[in-house]
Length: 468
Image (cartoon, rainbow, N blue to C red):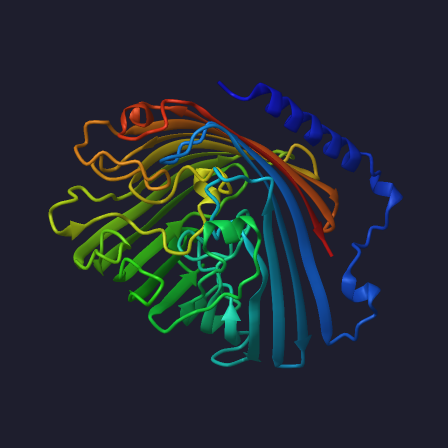
């Protein structure tokens, strides 16, 4: 049963926040967004910008191994970026402060939630135009970087999550007026700190670091120039990981080729998408220091969409979607088949993360229906229904760490209903978002060994974001 008293309190607080923000009449403020650079009267070659987001999250009935009861968190994320630019050369410093409050000893707190007072980006960039053809642009960045690649399902600068993946290395981007885009990078993924539970709960400040024993690189090409108005992408990622002292790993060493082919969205038309990727190489089943066995790896992921957009002022679009990501069929056969989510975003497909984050792009089969629309010029609404099954009944529901190696607990994890409403209070300055995800047990949670039980889950959140 849901904690109705807490839910009523959360709803009341949310309504108070919404009422306060909606009470700000659009005509009572300047049409020009307030910006720190302008307020500080900085020269044109120098800029300072940032965002501050405060989000309250509540989860009734936890699902992770060893966790029971309800949970809550107040997540704060502040980002400030300073950039200096000349005609072709620029340099940037971007800092992030991600903290969590109201959590307790039972919260499964991780580095996806806390990363206080940290350098997010610090790079030098060189931009040139007319390099290979008229109208093209080429940019090389070197230093500490955040990355977005293609659909962002495998490499992303996280938007919903409270912390952001960052890398140390070099990146090249090239684009032309015809819609061709090439991206290449070679990096060392940065390990976020602190990484111990108590230090995370205390929001301790420890500087992140990278090491030479984990290397991540990628090549990407996207184009709008395909027949019948189609657009497409091909990509290749490589991950080479070794254990280091104090940081055991699964020694992932694999290549990941993939593609995306799609019909762009347009009013009064159908659109579709097909995206797939494969992982080929070696890895270990666990990150335990005692696990020294390298397993042959072959894993896959695919997504299919079919959507229709109505020609209406509210821009409604209904989308049927299907995702599959392989699991490890036999934990004892010497091969490894579970798809690795790498550094991608999962909020856009599988629901909110934060203290919820129930589903990931790994050992999963999930069909769904999604409706997006803009009820007003300042609001966006999304509703989604999805079902979730294990691709392999003998592998884990990865986010919960629940697993039945015998396969006798079945495949059906849950049904999920998700909703989200975004409202722009002041354009480009103040935005509200609130939503929910309700997951109803499909049987696996009840039957899986060491499971907390067959309890349905309800996650709610609300946040306010300031851009300056």
